[in-house]
Image 1: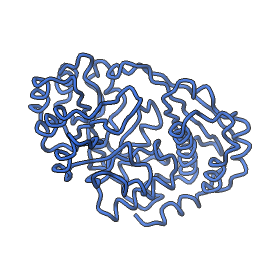
Image 2: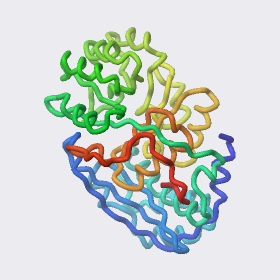
Image 3: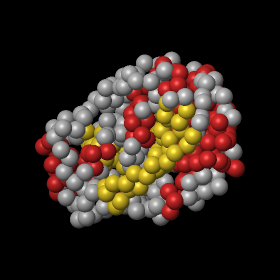
Length: 350
């Protein structure tokens, strides 16, 4: 990818006439909580662009900027670059969400909606606009194994979809038998140790026993977000050829601060926040030879399809955590799309 990709996107014409919101909700059985998101819709010239605000706090979805004032600001934008600049202006955020992450998630929702609208109005796909070729997207399914953890959820999905690949979050509550059952499937491509999360529902303290079992049970899997303490650092250092990073990476500058160099990076646009920083990170990793794969934050609508579009253009053959949302249902049906997903040829960013 050339550095001109962002500049070319900024030059796309755009016409915004109105803004609308739609609330989505779904009980995520594999995580035991109700997920709420908000679809941001920008409308103009007979087209609609959509993005998705994936803030975790339900309250943040009740504090959205007024549609009319937002539309009034965006109506003056003649190009996507103008629109992105106006989205970044603080005065648009009269309903600003709490916390830096939630603010980046909201900004990405508006920026991705603007990109979607500009592409549709120009009759282009993302791949067309950045000069790449969209390819079928390989995906993994990511879900928790219950409390207490059980192999059953994995068994149900592999019975229905024998070729399904997995990204799992090992915890200290997993016993030896469960590790053996999971290892025997040969289906685990990524194990996420959640060592970079603090104060969330998925925190996992660095546990030397857990880390040893994980490393030994899944010798070919990427090891994502380990925590390096005195008791775990030697083990992780020995596995640096497969250590991947997710939560600590938001910008290119973050790569230099990692405790172990990245063997791969899980790129989440809603954590990054802006199209400019996202494309800069893609460009840097491509030039540095760092493999990239995509990840989500339980999108329920347009956001998940946008992750699939990015993967199709930038990292189609990686273990992308972008499985269709229905894989998180209590018992997924037998008619879900399977990996790889064919890229869409329709104009737009989803």
